[in-house]
Image (cartoon, rainbow, N blue to C red):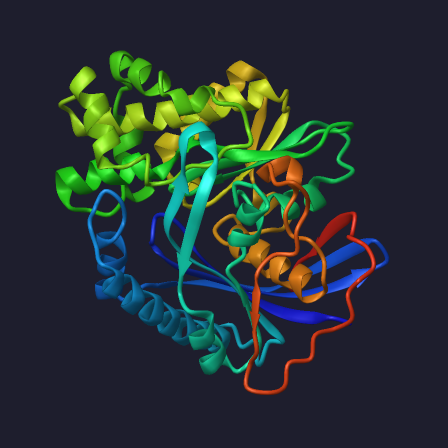
Length: 394
């Protein structure tokens, strides 16, 4: 039976809500993903400012977190209805919402002590009228995992049977990589910063949110002294499973690096940050012997970052493309991934890969909130699909 799912995703860059509608159906051991449509809707400016204002190292209050959980949930619900109308998708069967991460607490030794995604799913269910699957990460954390990267289940299914060591790379605020290799367990982890430090540097210098098209990073020249400092970051040398976020890679991190190796020119600073991000990813591509990598996320539009990745990949003997060539739009891959995760939960199937997150075992993820009618969950599927086939919109 085909289930139409709306996936909602807002990443660490807090640029807006990515919405993707997909038809998902199990065909033997293959799950077929029909790409119905996708769009991105900006956060209301005042709400985006409030989200950014509570992120570490800022101070906030329990009262503001409570209000934000409600207000972000309302906004998710309202933006979901706008997205469905824009995509002419009609009424979906299910919504899968990642929520907005405001804290990912990594303790000593890399153990995750908690993760918090806000955006009350009951508010989404109230506005859309169908069941909502949300709060995906906490069950994996409860089982001793990192709670990230959860998109690895889509990555493994998509690259299953490729016959070569290949990877999928997401370039959001943080870069995360999934390595799928014949004869080896799938591995996925956060490599380090992608856009997080680039955005922080630009916002501080100009007040702009991001380097449009990566033009400034592309025309700058990387500073070797700062590059050496950035690549000396202990996190980069840690083995997976591991995860990180803006709790680590923020303005304070950048200030600390610049005190050791000042770079006065903004274009050169951005070029150096792009080169450092690319070098960290390339080191992990080399570590796992990957020969092909497909990228997604906002970073694919940064010319400076993509040029740096191509340079670094050439050194390690890997090729780089975007997930568009696999049939999944690079700007909306994570929204499609969470739609898949919602489908898995709805059908009683695990959405986490223990080899990727470090959990004690695979877990069914998320919380299901009823829609406007009685909650009728289908009978659990007896086994996981082994492969994902993407079918483009007709």
